[in-house]
Image (cartoon, rainbow, N blue to C red; front, side):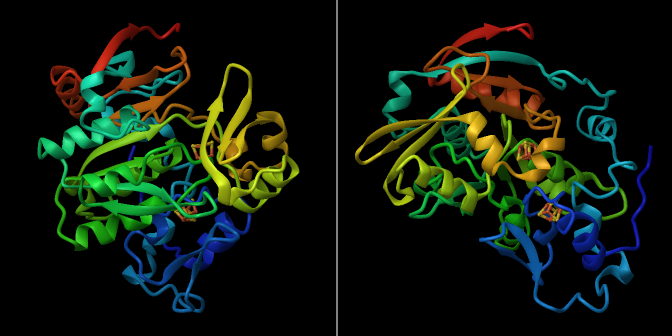
Length: 339
Ligand code: SF4
Ligand code: SF4
């Protein structure tokens, strides 16, 4: 199946996707457009006025509209992404994969990366050390634990991205910047919808994006919903948690709680309460929990406490995983689909 360019731009993106609550705040619409910025309070893209009256770019075939993962979902169903990424029909359960493992960082890993780091940072670090990637688009956080995207150009930058953040950051907006900085082997870490956006952006047959060659690694994080920052802060207030004092956040699936460590102790908030009060609207219609189109997917579902699940999906993912294993970074247990 081919998908065609659509003669629509910012106005239609705004009316069909953003104003209707379908936007997942992935950032793709701003990847190659300087007119699009982001409103960190409402967590939506905004534009600077250049595109309001006329869709200016590409003879009206606006990049923002055409690469948004939420546009044309009838023309670009997931099985098209499957054919682009894996050359196969769609696998509805976990997506295509080479193997599924449970991993834990070893003492050798602790000598190389901070103790708080997990397998995701370890994989990026190893890939960077080996020269397989030269930059990573990851997520840092501000003093209120709100995420924002950065281009990690070295190991220290990478370590700024350590730790789970419950909200979305528009990471794909930095793809163009990373290319302009002349990085040629870029890694991207994102939620499943962001990896879908990345694959659309890389493979859209109607556009000739350099992103296809210059993005060398996509790591997806398992996701069961991201939370609006403002509403999440209100939920934290209800539980007497000051966002400025948060040290780390973890989502514990086996007792359906979010665990928040602060300077004064630890609190748990039921996920049901958080979903009712602060989950992003677009997440209710999402069905890709494991980042089916990533090179490697990472999450804690399916593994014991202290371990993480890795789904190795592509030869590139396998190459970087093997590197980590050969360097003694991971203790590994095989898992199968039924786990
Ligand atoms: S590309 Fe992403 S951030 Fe932009 S409108 Fe679409 S979903 Fe929202
Ligand atoms: S639940 Fe789906 S739509 Fe929501 S952030 Fe996660 S991957 Fe994106």
